[in-house]
Image (cartoon, rainbow, N blue to C red; front, side, top):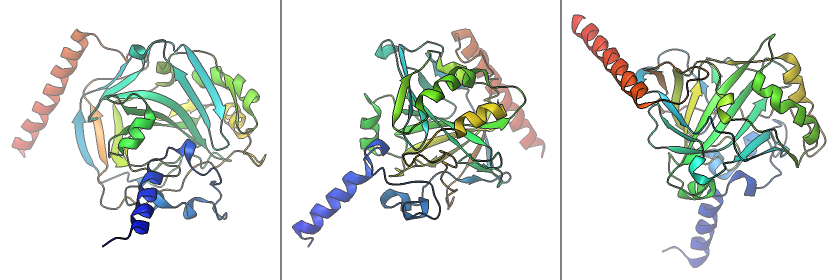
Length: 322
């Protein structure tokens, strides 16, 4: 029979797994040689559903899904705060009213999810920086749009729920280009204001849809975790295949930021974790999603459903002919 002391310890352990990153021990870092580095992260970080992963470039199960739907993403928030927390740059927004909070759904997601914040991971050089890899290939930066299940009032409630699908994170890769990223161009002037760790500033206002550039008809989907302590295994990951552009000057602006130790804030990515027996889906949506087409009328939805039906019928005909 468990003793009162052992029960108390188990209760503390369970509570610690539910704490959001902002409430966790801030002594952790990304240095491989440090006793506080990724290989020494404890508790939930030792699970078997961890993120990020090295996504295989071949041999994945291919599925067709409805399009990703972005409700209210085209609305400007009432407020936006850009913060350097010593580990990343995070943009948090506040909708004008709760009813105008951006909501992500569709694309095979099990629920609707409210937008919470967006943050970035980047490398000291262009050959590394992204958390996810594609067939062992890394990108210089990765952007994460974090969402929580819409049935909850806030992200803390979703973290406390602790289900495998409590959060949904939308990940984008960046690829160095001669052309600057127009949305990052709006944010970058504010980086000088938060060069030091644990500083924040009021950001310029723009719709979150401005971050949704490129082709989102193809992406990867798998069950995973947060990529920072306590690594809660509660995330539906959607990793968009098509990288978006970023200029060298824009990358260097991120590299000028500092950690709490006044060191360059670079290489803030967790190494890829074991995939184990998890399945990664190679998803193609039935309707084209490009910049400027993230909201849909009822007629658009009907057309999208018809396109999806045609795709399924063509695949069935091909299977019969074989």
